[in-house]
Length: 101
Length: 507
Figure 1 (cartoon, each protein chain N blue to C red):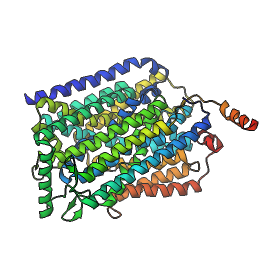
Figure 2: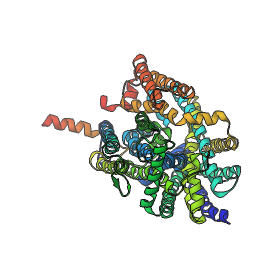
Figure 3: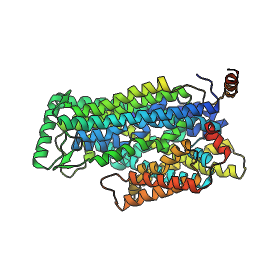
Figure 4: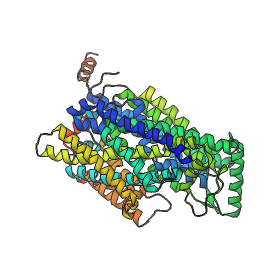
């Protein structure tokens, strides 16, 4: 749990929202490229577990990719902070800190 | 006897749901005495990650995910699964983009509903009232559609009449929602999501074992598909665009708009947004993003794939019958009655979990956004006991009205229901997204966008005006965006008080 001021929370939340959009864009791109790409290249002749490869990779692949990327988001990008309490001092102290430096 | 065996698991499940409703009413008595609307409408901001994920997904997945969708997949093949799989982003996107801001601002402003947040952000009672009305109209009609769908499945499988089925299961959902409030909705949604998954696995097992394994099923499907392509009388089940007689039945344009309607724009749905106000802490929302993505993918890809595979078991349906009959036919013809009872809970649960959430959110629009707000405006004191009585009455009446209408559904409501999903997105997508991320967004822009976008969407839907084969969500959301931006530059900018609250990083 990080102590953050109201302002710092918003800076962080904007960053998280941006990262979420990027993840969504990657999934959408993956979905289009694998679905139409594999079908365009091999039709329905290649199969995975008996079902068409384009379907397996685009549908299950996008799902697994989503799970993986969301895992990345919540462990690497998203930060835990208190939704209610703010740390009003951190802003000031960081400024002072900079001035000292 | 078979009918009786089917009803046993359903009965047990219904009793559990009602029990949960009353149990939660009892345990939350103290919290309700203090602040009734906060507890009744958002559960006192107490949801953990697992329940948050389940209630979000269960609310989102409706009767169409379990009935109409797999039915069409049975007919069109894997292309339809591909089409439905755009929904994998629906759980994490809303939580990741809007989730935390809604939670932080909701706490800061003591907001209980989405309309509360809109009122705080745009400082406009007109916009707030339009929002509340849009929510009430579209939620009621959607609920009605769900009641009709649920009652149809129920009667198809159990052999009870439509009206008996409707009254039986509608009574259960209205009762537990009314007494238990939001917490009961969230907990029962979780139970519903779990039985939806169980139902799906039972159905999957039945289909694969009856069909003699995936290989046999795929051989049957390939043969059916090849015949369909050769004669031009059916769909190419193995292609993403499901061609019929050489013409794509799911053209690329439709895939693009599907990404809006059932992907990106779902972050505007108020029934999803209100869940962002209801969770406990940041850890909960992080976990919910992961769990939600796992479950929504399993349900959407899984159920629609089962729809396709069921073609290997059920080669034809009665001529003229709707593809909606595929899933009930599978359950009633190919499953042991007890397992059938367990499986039928799945689509019923999908229906009930959607209804309960719409009912509680619709009721909050009347009680909190209209009644309590007018009290506050007049500076009158709010009596928590009175709010309690009104909340319970409004929820019950709204539910009962929807049930009565569903007995003999008026055409106009069935018709409005067709616009509800896209209409809600058109009205709220930019209002929420730009409201929370663009400081220049103001009331003028939001009102123009909401009213203009909705008008454009509903009129083009009603008159069947289309741009190519794109879904009209493109017109709705597109018009709303343009009007929103123009209005925001024309209207007055937000004052510093709102600015500092919603955009502290700009100061």
